[in-house]
Image 1 (tube, one colour):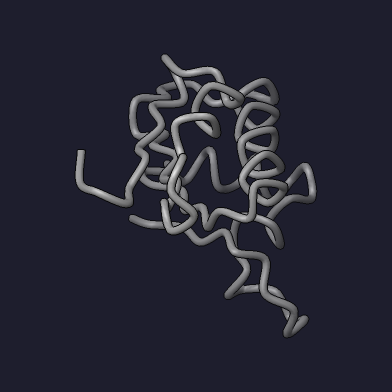
Image 2: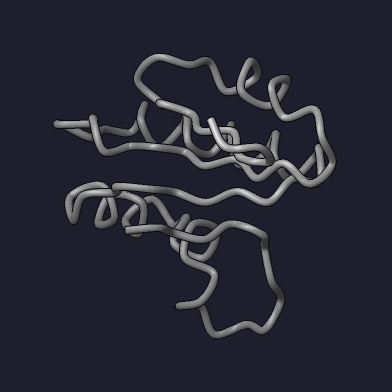
Length: 100
């Protein structure tokens, strides 16, 4: 794993455990959801918990490998502004971005 990068496989890692792995203040947390075949609300809940933990720990976070179905579900539950900060109208940054 590259220094300064904590990659979280959402299917295998508890969000709280992932935050604990980010020990350096400059560590960036990457939530890898590429293995999620059938996203559901539980998937989005885990992502939101990871995001909240990253924000509380003042760590930047990115989402990698989100399928169109997962991105649609994120928008449906009203969290698009959290996971897609570049797309929302407000200028307030959130620290979470999406990697494709």
